[in-house]
Length: 143
Image 1 (cartoon, rainbow, N blue to C red):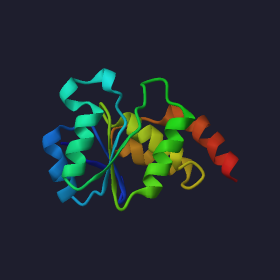
Image 2: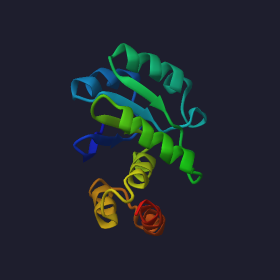
Image 3: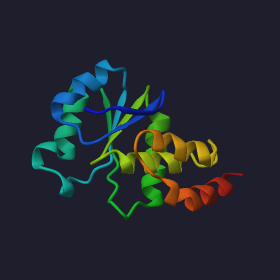
């Protein structure tokens, strides 16, 4: 498991397994957000099984599947709502952590400087520079 903390309250990771959930809880996370559609992954890692295992480990669980190249504002709103409702730090995963970083940056538009959002993701290997115009547009709407 490769935990990449973007903030003290939000971390991303490449795909996890069922066996990782207890360690995620032990690391202090309260919620897991699954940003990966079931169609991309083996059946043993599908949402329903991950949800059951997360709940059994004492974690809140939210499924917010983000289709690569087809992120929607509904995905952004769902991520923001889940993060706001979380009873503690949030752990989000997808194939590489990139989609989790993207959707996080979009939820933070207008709350954190654009340069900071892009730099934070970059420190963990995620290049969000191509999203600068979209982040700036979302930030302007919140002003």
